Image (cartoon, rainbow, N blue to C red; front, top):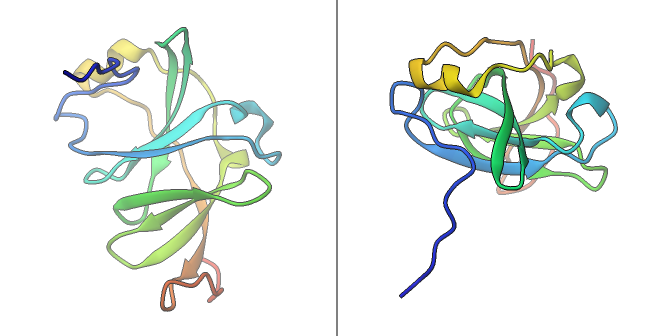
Length: 138
């Protein structure tokens, strides 16, 4: 038999339906989020920043809503994060420096009362699997 480790973060389907795994932020543009795990929900487009201590959720902040359903995350050599928008086929560079890092109590997830924060993103079009630039989001 297989042994599974329980998850650090779960939520009801009232909050979202499908976790899209992310990365621990190691960039320099948003020092307040350094060490936070950034992930999202595919269907609701919610984006979160999580911290944990000894596999127990310490904090969760909803950092925004993606302009498109999030199908994947990536990071560049500097540790800055990107996500892939399923609906529009665009790679978004996340501007995490604009995020308010006020902690939302984890228990609020149970009733779906998370706060919303703005996320700015630069758009990048996918061209045959490449990362060529096409302009900025308005």
